[in-house]
Picture 1 (cartoon, one colour):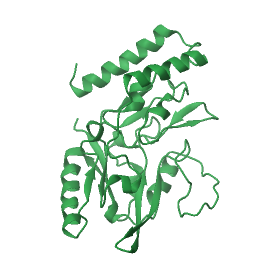
Picture 2 (tube, rainbow, N blue to C red):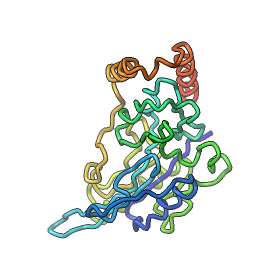
Picture 3 (cartoon, rainbow, N blue to C red):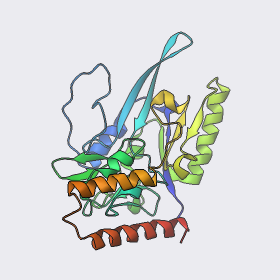
Length: 265
């Protein structure tokens, strides 16, 4: 199956937040009570109940303020740090290339929340599990396997969000970048084509990624970092209630499955 992706073109986005609302509705996530903190953003950050939000930026360009918006959600990395560090193999890639969490296996250790360079996964302290955007592939809420677009892309009224085969969307994204450069946006770029071996959420940006709070060169956690995190879990007793052979067997199964999909086994 060809990899799928979501293309976000910020030059077409009006920040209507239809995607944000449809994500909540489809995934049955409750609204959050927030306070006015000096921005039109609401809520302030992603959480276990908010998997997608719009960010607002006031950017000074040539002595004038430019009002820009950007989508904030899981980037669905090919080299997914969250999946790499999960001690029980609860985080995996779907056949479409999206990163999902098997919440029946998640033990709520929170290691993945530290490993993500985009700070996406969040722990639900009431349920004791981690959750995030699954690109509408979550069991019971799966649109993609039924041939439907993710709810966010389906609801976008301006075409700023598009779902389809990744290779096709890459071509569309590159074409739009060239149009932006032709209109004076010299730093326009397609973010996600190569980062972390390719993201499955691609961004058409009109400026450098750091302008919009995106890491210029996101990195996987090092093996030393992973070892320290897992050692910390063991010291804290998080893993002590689980049979180690069961943990390693499950983790090995998920690693083998992901490598087979990538053609490395």
